[in-house]
Structure formats: structure tokens, C-alpha cells
Image (cartoon, rainbow, N blue to C red; front, side):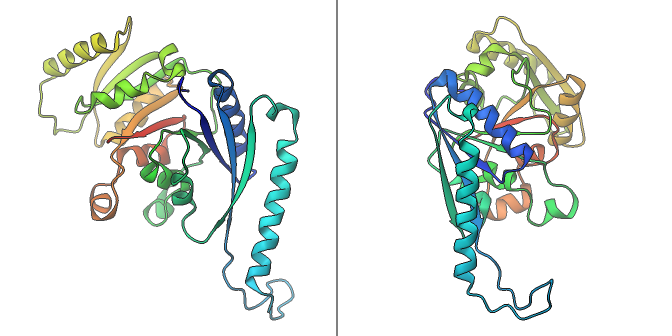
Amino acid sequence: MSDEMKTILVPTDFSQLSLKALDRAIELAIPARASIVVLGVVKYPEPVLMDAHTGENWDRDMDDVFEERVEGVENRLRCLLDQPKYHRVPVSAIVNRQKSSVGETIAASQADLIVMASEGATGWKEKTTGSNAERVVRYAQCPVLIIKNEAPVQYQNILFPTDFTNTQALRTFFTFRDVRKAHPHFLTVNTGYLDRSFDDLKEDMAELAIDLKLESYSYQIIDAVSEDAGIIRYADEMNADLIALYTHGRTGLSHWFHGSIAEKVVNHSEVPVLTMVQH
């Protein structure tokens, strides 16, 4: 997406949605002349005391089982990337031998952009482990593009939630080629705690538009019970092709009590989400 983007990381579990993410990464890499690294992750298996099918004790060494799984993923990646459609840009594949969080492993990569699929997380899953995409958004130091079920090839309408406390993050989004071509829709969600009047917010928006050299844009202030609920509702109302927002990347107690608006949107949005860590 960025003119200076060199490496795109695409995690895959070989699902149809993750393959759609790979296709999207190819389309982004071509104009940027970027290379793609496809990542397969193999988690170390939990000890198994009994075979579920035969009821017999299973005394195979876990390291042997692990290496068999790694070899299987390597073979699948090799077959996948043999397809001609993946020969349009430099593409390589790696398999990560993972013994902890998959999301943290992906986030720790030295990529300029991570493109990954996510079906989100709701209910008990969200409260306990969350989605892998949520953890990547929390820890990644590069932009993350989350592909959902309906991912358009081109973005015509992009939603930018903002309270104008970090306009530098918004400026960074506009270094992306795809973002510059789209019509920007800016949104401020009022949950009852805004410390500025609506007139002041509109003035902030006008100044931001001048700063970003926008010829046209839309701006809306809406009421909602929470920022993430307002963002998702408005994205649906305006038929957004992409939601672009920054995350504080909070961890520990701060994350436990406050969470992250970006992570919640990633879990519940039905349209693609582009996130960037606020420094």
C-alpha cells in the first residue's frame, strides 16, 4: 500500500479466507514492487496419552510428531506457491516452529505490512483468548491489514475514526497509495465524554483537511454507547470498504481495564480493517 513498502508478511492456515488475504497481498505488492513472505505456523502439540480413535496409549515422541507437522506444512506451502498466479512478485515461504502465542509470533516479524485473514472473535472466545488478528494488532509495530469475508479489490470509501488527538497517525495512513485514491469519511463518536463542542470538532476537521490537502471528504459526529460500536455501525451505514484506525498497542493491566478500540473493531467488523500503532 505504501510506496516505500518492501516486505509483506502473509500468515496462512490454508483456509479460503487466508488464501484471499494472500491474493490481496499480491495485488498490493505489484505496484509497490514489494516481496511477499508467506508464513506457516506450526504449534508444538500438547502431550497425548491416548489415541482418540483406537483407545490405545500413544507413546510417540512429541518432537517426532512436531517435525512431521512442520514437514507437512512445508510441503503444502511449496505446492501452493507453485501456482502461476503467485509468480508475479517475489514470494518466499517460511514455517515457524511455535511454542507460544501465534499472534505474538506474527507481530514480531520484521515486515513493512502484515496482511492476514480473520473471522473475528465474539462471546467467551473474545473474553479469554481473543482472535489471532486481535493479538497481532496489539503487538505489531507495522501496519496490519485484516481481510474479512467480503474484501474488495479496490477501496472507494474509507472510514477514518478520529477524535483529533493524534492527527499524525492519520497523516501516515495517507502515505498509502490505496488510501489516497479513495474518498475519505471521517468520524467522531460521541459517547458522552467529548471535551470539545461540535463546532470545535468541525473546525479541527477543516484544519485537518487543509493539512492533508483533501479536495473532498465527509465528516460526521454520531452518538453511540461505545467508540467501537459507533465505528462498526457507521461503517455499515456508509458501506465502507475499509476502516483505518490506529491502536495504542496497550498491554498488561492497561489493556485489561481499557482494551483497545482497534482490537474490538477487528473482532466485530464485517469489512477489512487497516491498523497502525500510535507511537
